Length: 254
Ligand SMILES: [Zn+2]
Image 1 (cartoon, rainbow, N blue to C red):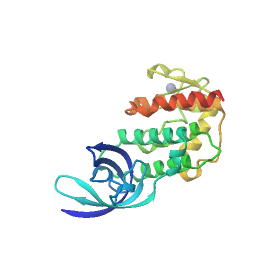
Image 2: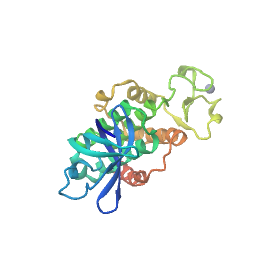
Image 3: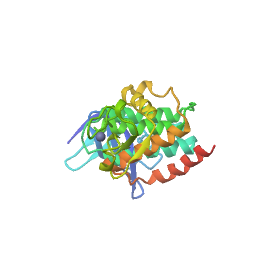
Image 4: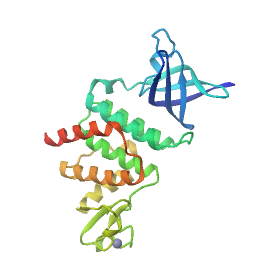
């Protein structure tokens, strides 16, 4: 039995009985772990304010032979502004759920944690950037970090260079030429210019990514391409996704 200090983000909370919560915390250096927050739901509890979803904090964790539980919390950020805007909250919840359902327990994934924190931070500020574009950036970087960076400079099956491809398609792993399009169970015909946007997102540092915009037409296609790739590689049975699709329709109607 011992204690250790770790920095992390609460990505899922489950209320247990009247007093406790079981949390999934995405820790720096340690990855995702289940941690108990005992007696945290009383306002008198010293960990009351540090055991909610979206809390990013330094935790003192007590480790017994059977489980981990929180002893102390020092909150760094709780992304409070997310709760002021229902749309931002929906996107933020979707990001947490996509990560929570698709990363393995106990594996350090600091780049993914950084991606999540950066996107929550952007959503919690009232910036002049479409939330659908924030989503596109998040999903593409998520695919890249998890080893599914799409191939966009040639056909991913026959390696025909992009310049030699007359009609360009996109499949589950990136660009496909007309001859190879039948290999993917689903393909989307694309304008080659959209690949410049994808390349910009994939080749830029996450800290330098939120200063550009794209047309709604491109945004709609980018969302469809991401959906195609995500469905092929990940568990996308995500509750918050349906709410997001309603918002997305609303955003494009404006
Ligand atoms: Zn080909």
